[in-house]
Structure formats: structure tokens, C-alpha cells
Amino acid sequence: MIRKRSGVSHRVLALAALGAWLVLLMQAQVQAQVQVQTQVQTQAQTSPPNKTQGPLRDVVPLGGWWLDRTEVTIGQFERYVRATQTVTRAEKEGGGFEYGAGWERRRGWTWRQPDGVPASPDLPAVHLDYAEAQAYCQWAGGRLPTGAEWQKAGFTEMRQNPPAPWVNGRTYPWTTGDSPQGANTSDPDPWPRAAPARATRAGVNGLYDMGANVWEWTSDARGQERRTVGGSWWYGAFNMKADVQAYKPADFFAVYIGFRCAYDRAPTGAGASSS
Ligand SMILES: [Ca+2]
Image (cartoon, rainbow, N blue to C red; front, side, top):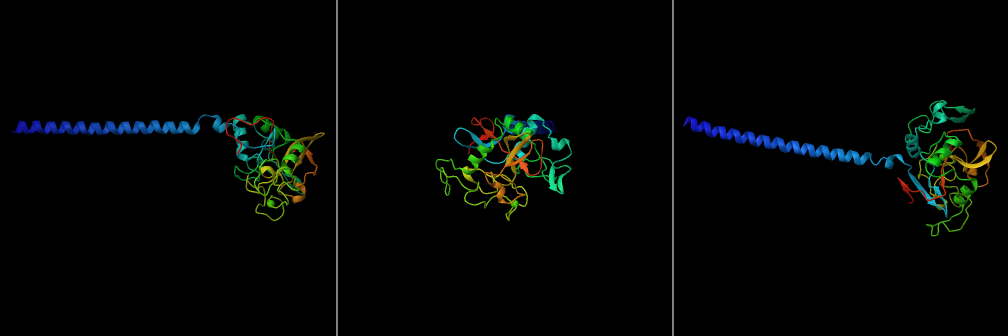
């Protein structure tokens, strides 16, 4: 009887051990599956590399050429820096400039931190001289626009069927339309300094900040100077006007000067968007 009981309890023990082993095996399988899933998810987030490394563009078609819808942002410029290991002059030389009692260097003010403190990636990239802006545009497959291109795109509506109140073929007095309202100037508005991309009112051709916010480099040259256009948040609306001739030394960089790129071919590739 005792031996028989013992035999039964051995079988029970063996079955229990088998059951425990099966549970462990299933747990291990589930764990392995989770690990594989995590790996797949991680790979999906980090690849292909050009999804996060290439230029990210939102361009406006203008009949044979294209223009960035917004000023190049800190986030866009960061992709370029990651891809090219570029170190800008403002970083190397200890900071960009702001106007105080004359031009004053501000320590630690760079494209990444325009005002010396961590900034939104949607703010315009500034503290970049003409060559640095041009180098970014070339990397992105474009170039800096000419002053005439800026004027055409900024003031004359070229969309075939633009949304109201815009009228195809009409040239407006302001990049924002019939008045400078909605632009980021020094006049009363919601933005005491630079405004992030798409925060102001969309203007002619659906472009943002062609007037005010930050000056934009163009390729128009006068000796060692290059023309900047549109005015900035530091000025009143008068500097948004098409005929303003504001040339600056090509090797200058400051908190008020940014840029956008023009393209002779439809930008394609990672991150491109024509919306
Ligand atoms: Ca303002």
C-alpha cells in the first residue's frame, strides 16, 4: 500500500514537474516573442536612416520652380548638422550678434539656441551667414532665391485656384495681402521675438513669413554684401515692402537673419512634401 501510494505520488510529482516545465517553456517563448517585437519596433523607428537624416521640406510650386513654404527651421537645420557634422561660425566664434549699443556678440547664441536658451525646433534657424545658408540649401537640393524670385513669390498670387480671399494673378501690396496684419513685426502682435513656422498668417501663394519674422538671405550681391529681404520682428511693417534694399555683409550673422531655399527641380526624396 505504502509502495503503491508512493508510486501514485511520484506520478503526481512527475506530472506537476512536467506542467511547471511547460509553463516555463511558454513563458520563455512569450518573452522571446516580446524581444523580437521590440527589436522590430526599434528597427522601424531608426531605419531607414534617410527618413530621419535627409532634408525635410514643405515646398510651394511656383510654375517651374519651388520655394520653401516656411523659413528653414531649427529642426530642419539640425538634420543638416547631423548629416554633415557642420559647426557654424557662431558656434566656433562664441555666439551670434544682437543689436544693443551697436552690434553686440551674445555668448552661446547659435542656430540651436537663437536667444541663448533651449528653443522650439519650429523656430527659424538664425545666426547663419550667407555661405552657411547657401550650403544648407545646396544640401537640400536647392539654392538661395534671388531678390526678384522672392518678390514674385511673395507678392504675386500664382496659384490657379487659390483659396479666398486670394486672386490668381493679383500683385498685393504686402506679402500678407492687402495689409501687413498677421505678420510678426515690432507692431503689437502675439510674438515678442521670432515666431515658429506656420504660427503667423499664411500669405500670398500660401507662403509664411515672406515678410517680417526674420530677414532672409538672397543671392543678390553688391560686392561682399548680400541682399536680405522681408524685414524682421525687430522692425515695423515698412521693411516688408518689395522695394526695400537691405544689404548686409555676406559674412555677418545675427539673431534677426534666417533664410529659405528655392529649387529648380521638384524636390524629391525623404521627407519631401508638396502639401
Ligand atoms: Ca512681433
